[in-house]
Amino acid sequence: MSVNVSSEPNVWSPSRKAFTVFVICYAFLYMFPRPFSEIPGLDVIFSVYTKPLEIATLWFGKTILGITTLEKIAITGSGDTTFDYVNLLFIFLLSIIATIIILLVTKKKNFQSWFQVTWVYARYYVGLFLILYGVIKFFNGQFQPTHIARLEQTYGESSPMGLLWTFMGHSKAYTFFGGFIEFVAGVLLLFRRTTIAGALMGFGVMLNVAAMNFCYDVPVKLFSSHLVLLSIFIVSPYLGSLYRFFFKQEVLQLKIESLIFKKKWQHITHKVSKIGLIVLCSLAIVLMIVQVNSTPENAVYANSFNGSYEVKTFVKNGDTIPPLMTDTLRWNKVLMEEGNIVIKTVKGRGNYYAVKTDTIANQLIITSYKDSTKIFKLNYKRLPNEELLVKGKWESDTLELLWKQKKKNEYELNNRGFHWINEYPFNR
Image 1: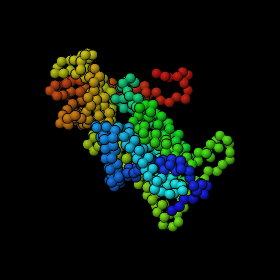
Image 2: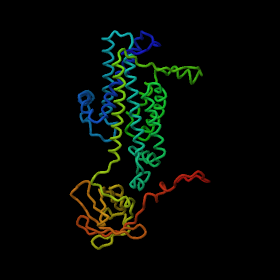
Image 3: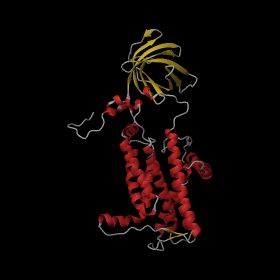
Image 4: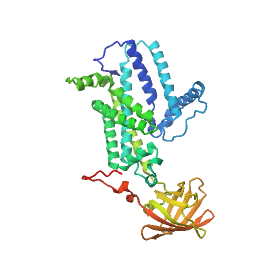
């Protein structure tokens, strides 16, 4: 396989060689084996590479950096753990060492073919991840509609990330729009003729995402920043031409050199590999969406119970308990949604449980998340005005409660709607 690079000089300067080789090594070490490892089953194969790298990173962190407590914790949704930062420093230093060795060993006049292969890899890496993040936004996989617990939470109690997630999840239209832009940018990156458009669009999208991650303390700072840098890497061969076009108004033609294969089987292998990668990654995205939106088989819950319930009366063992601010045991509010229930006391402390609804026996079956052997069955009776009379045993006590339901569409955030005409700003 060779690359048509007739417009490039045959001999590079030592500084250009060193910088290019370092970028290639760092980009490859950071990206590999993703996104291939996201395909179900392939993660086991690539563990032959990832496991030794993990062991080396832990050794480097504990022995060289002196972080004796360093460990690779289970997946928590954070990409900015101590291990991630140590790993980033490790591959940075490893890239410097690899660059020195390569420059001492090889006598190559330039590294254009190496750059081109890494450039293609970066295209698929950024493109497929943009498609992934775009698609999951279409199916509430990243930003979900505001939950009851969040609606009952004050601004002051929320974290910056929680505030951002509430903002994004509130509007399905805006979330869809953001996902659509990411999806389009990702698709454009998968095809040679539209690569520059995709890279520029991806750069703009990911720069905004990275800014939000930094400004709202979202723990995906490293990954989003690298997608920005890789977008710059993809467009880097054409920065000079883009500058002359935008700022000097010169008439230019951007031409992306295509890979040239000497043999037919190489060309066929390239096409089949490209199609196979896209199909397999698409399958992985579909499986992820199904998993995110799947409902557990044992989850029997009626959505009509969704809402925030004010506990108007609380009778324990025949005694009516008033809502005193010093009481840490009396129930004050009950939040129910999608098979989960939060029981909050007057002082605001909340305990979380799983809940099933038996609409035939008129029972709420509540199971403790901390101890699955603790199962409480409370009988309920629906009353007028969205009230619920609840009776049953709780621990060793007999309870009789009157709940007043407030549904999601009764909150100002959800019932305001869209207005073309506003005589005055409705800003609360």
